[in-house]
Amino acid sequence: MTAAVDADTTPLLSVRDLRVRFGTKRGVARVVNGISYDVAAGETVAIVGESGSGKSVGVMALMGLVKQPPGRVEGSARFEGAELIGATEAELRMRRGNRMAMIFQDPMTSLNPVRSIGYQVGESLRVHQGLSKRAALDRAGELLDLVGIPSPRQRLREYPHQFSGGMRQRVMIAMGLATDPSLLIADEPTTALDVTTQAQIVELVGDLQARLGMAVVWITHDLGVVARIAHRVLVMYAGRIVESGTVDDVLADPRHPYSIGLLESLPKPGVERPERLFSIPGLPPDPVHLPAGCAFWERCSFRLDDAERDTVPELREVSPGHAVACLYDVARPRS
Image 1 (cartoon, helix red, strand yellow):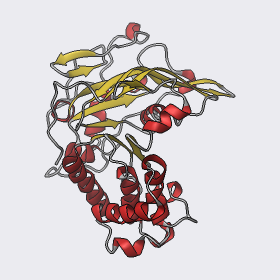
Image 2 (tube, helix red, strand yellow; image 1 turned 180 degrees about the vertical axis):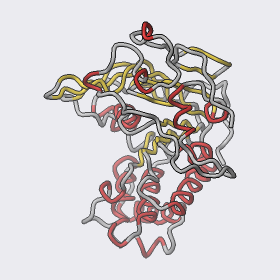
Image 3 (cartoon, one colour; image 1 turned 45 degrees about the vertical axis):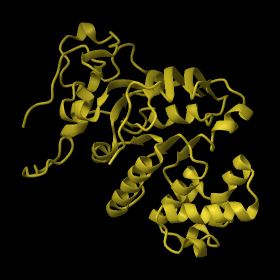
C-alpha cells in the first residue's frame, strides 16, 4: 500500500524541460526530449516505457550520473528548492546518497564483491553523517533488520556472493535508506528477480515508504507493479512523456495509442488466452534519427491523415490531472 499524499504541498522534486543528449559517431542521440513533472513528498510516481524510452537516463541526469561529455544535460530539476542541473560535484554529493538515494537494476554489479555487506551499507553513514566505524556497523545491522534480512548482525561480515538475488536487492534498499532520504529512486529494481521475490521487494518498498514518509520514483516496464504501488504514472516514449495521470487514469482509461498498446499486450485475467498476445508493431525510433513530428506515428494504429505526421503533439489535458500528447481523441477498446 502507498502512503497518502497531500496534493497542496510544494513539490519535493520539480523537473522542467529536461533534455539529455549524447554525442556518438553516428551523430547526436536525443535520449530525453523536454520532460517536465513534479513529485510530492510521500508520493510514488511510476515512469514506464520500453527499453530506450529515456526513463532511466532521465533520473540519472537528476543524480548527476550522466558524464558530460559525451552527454549534455539541459533544463531544470529543483530538489528541496535547490537546482540539481549544473550543480557542482560537491553540491550534488551533499544530496546524492544523503537526501536522494537510488536503487539500481542489478545489485550484483552495484555491490563491491571484495567489501563486506556491513562495510558497504555503513559507508554512506560514515561519509554523510560522520559516524564512527563501530556506530556505522551497528546502524547497518539495524537497516538489514529493517529490510527483512534474517540474522542481520551475522550477515554484516558476509560478501555479496553469499546472498541470493532477492537478498542483494534488500541490501541495496538498506543502503538507500541509510541516511533517511526524502526521495528514493528505484530503477527497475525487480527486473532480474523471480516473480515471488519481485512481489516481496515491491511490498517491502511500499511498507517502508508508508513508515518513513519518503517519496519514490519507480522506473519500470511492468504495469502490474505500477498498479500496485503508484499514485501517478508517466508514460515515456522516444524521450518524451506521452501520457501522465493518476494510476486509475492511465491504467483504466488510457488515452495515448502507445499506452493502449502496452495495456493490450498484457494477459487478461479470466479471459481465454489467444494463440498470440497482442504486440505493438515495429520498433522504437533511433534517437539519432528521430522523426520531425510524432515519434509514434509509424507504429500507431489510430493515425488518420499523413499530412499530420510531421506535427509534434503537445501534452494536453483530457480530464483534470490527466494529460496526453496525441493529435487524436482515442480510447482503449472495450473487451
